[in-house]
Length: 293
Image 1 (cartoon, rainbow, N blue to C red):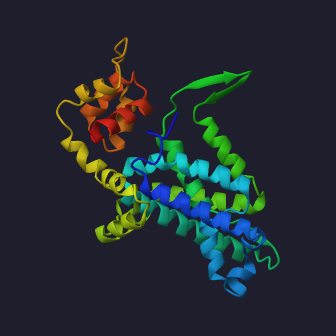
Image 2: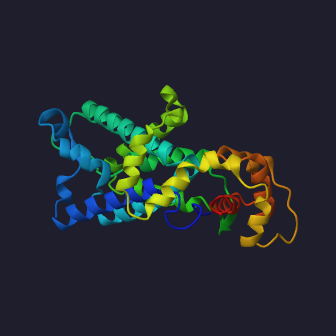
Image 3: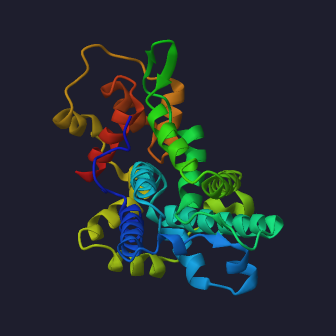
């Protein structure tokens, strides 16, 4: 299982967030200020430290957390490709703000003025992403190791568990708040899943991203709208990149529904699944490449 095409194709917002998170973490690491990060009761209800609230969104508190966190953020770029950069930006803002409010509420209940109760880092976004990962990303392969059964999704779950337990209670709290935030987004609270940023805001952020992001932003923003304008010969485009299957495999209705939910039209989704022998991830790559031609 993979997150689609390698790199940050059609995922400029993810790249910007990963770069920002890495820069802030390295900055505090070089200065030896990891110990100053994290939220406590005093930081919020004593002497308000706004910079800690902001840094808790981006900066991890250790190198291992940074590695696992960036790996998960990089994988979850698949969601930006599914719903487009604009709506994914809404998901990021909603997940971060909602999980942050839940963390503040939890700190207020615990009322421990001495301890840093919440470890820093984009735990809200990462663990909110596990909600659509659980419900919307299908299992492609299953395998057995000794007497234990695994799937291709198991490695992502293992990385998430490692990150969740990295600082024990201090990381479990923001992780659970992130899962709650992701659940609220999935439940479409306040119709948040239909929300979009105004176009001028999207254009502004597309200009401040890295130079090579311009074209990918335009592509990802128009993915869902351009599906209806796909050429009438997608199969011919697919054949140029993928050899025909040795044996025709009739796509399952669940696989077709999964691709349609990503924004692809039903006919193109079915053709791609036939070409990919009912492998949803490969079919997604085929459809994305067909749109890029």
